[in-house]
Length: 319
Image 1 (cartoon, rainbow, N blue to C red):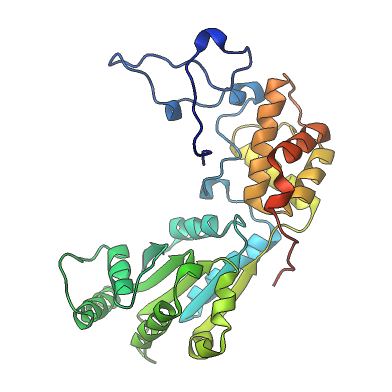
Image 2: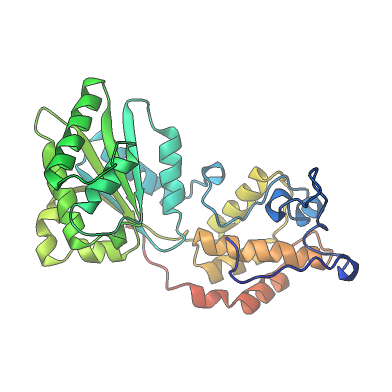
């Protein structure tokens, strides 16, 4: 993730000794390499082969903390018991999308998955999102009944081929009550001897608030598996998380001191995205000071400069 509005000037003659990016190199066609094609110089400084604290969800860096293990177990439980609707919620940056990407990567061949992100719109438009996620033809305008029959025929063809279908809605807190009710109606396609469709909703805590509204009682009764993903609950877990990501990125050397890890935990409340923000900047600061270790003073400076504490809320208990 890049900060919007950042401008990088190619003033090579004015570049400090510890510039973060290497000078732009001419490409084979006479132009210049794009910035994204080169890696941060601090990787060499710390002996890294990859960027350990990127904000982009990456299942290669999946860390199985206690809370993430329980959340994934609930996903597996929902699939194994053919729960009509499974709901996973969590704070922003808690690792929900990374869990989903791991599920997509580890899914068995008899599971057909459609992933819908940031669906929005009125009744009928949801079916367009659903069919698109399953690579079905959505060209041209057709009435809702036609789209519904198209979807049902797809589910039955998958069933005949020995597969069942899972629809995953990421950022599901953006779904309206009308769209959630439409999903509940879609789950009616299943019958006692014909399990065709499962639905998984992944979103921020607001999703739970929507589901618990009195007028959403029928929908809530269809939710058979549910879990709230909180941040990691100890500094030891955060230290293990930091060490794990550094190991995946190419080094087993202790870069962050135990005291630094304790400060990262206190400021981040154990939320992975905030941990990554702090640690990425801390590596930049350490590189600028020609230090190979990140101590508590550097972490305090990052927290103060980035106002990290204002990005987090009070920790929530595991559920």
